[in-house]
Length: 367
Image (cartoon, rainbow, N blue to C red; front, side):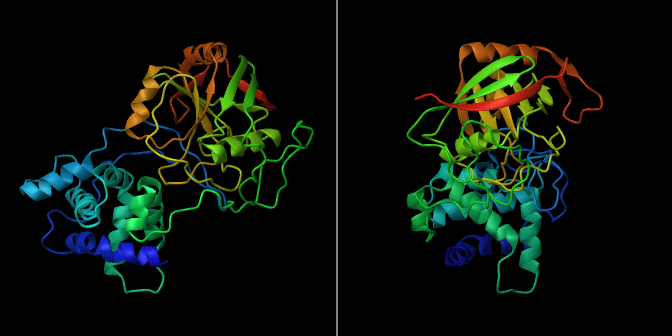
């Protein structure tokens, strides 16, 4: 809590006072234009007690923080098509982080890019409300964005207590499932999965689909929480019989992992996992977690990066890459993507024809 209070004293007063004072150009109305980088602008509907995933969507280059700072310093008007009050807010946060807190420009830009229009509105409401002992949820959301974007040194400089990677994550009551896959199917959990994989060993996820087999080496070195989460869900047969419900050649992806509804509005397993890094780049053959625009909102849905168009997501960089498939598997994925047809009743545009199902996902210890 102390770190949040210090952040409020450091960054928010300047930005919030400007937003609600007559000296700021523009008003508080949202014109609907995207702010910062839209990580997943068409967020899925959430069910009570469970966070849902959202589809990845390419975003414009994320430069509002730096541009707003330049405009504020030059006295020029904000760029057309962007709500002025939101541009000013992001610019002031950027300037506070860089000029007052000494944060690097790249880290500050990452923070600004993840500030949604809804967060801006919530900040304004918070500033205009009566003081309370506990900061609102939106402050906690911003705090999480900063812990994702700032380096450990920058977090320490701002008075944050960086997360200790050796500290076990709070998990649900479920045990590790049998490694041989002999356990029952489970779709709903009361918390994140325990660490069940040996982090010193190599593990491969084997997708048996109606379109062929795909083998994916899981990255237990750089993304152990994400890789373990996927593997444990697979051993609980979470993905068995699920549909690869979306193909999108324009950004080169195949999306799946929604056993309840076979759609992006699936409620998920009942928990979310932390983002393991930012600034990811995307290339053919990767398996990547889907998520909403909120930080730390991934749970179970995933997508395959299939062709070079997936690089259009690089401007977002927040979808965690946690594995790589071999060439033979990529050929299977390319064939699935090539079978894409537009589907008027599909809110995401289309899927493969004929439909492709995941019969099972088996986790093998390969080294």
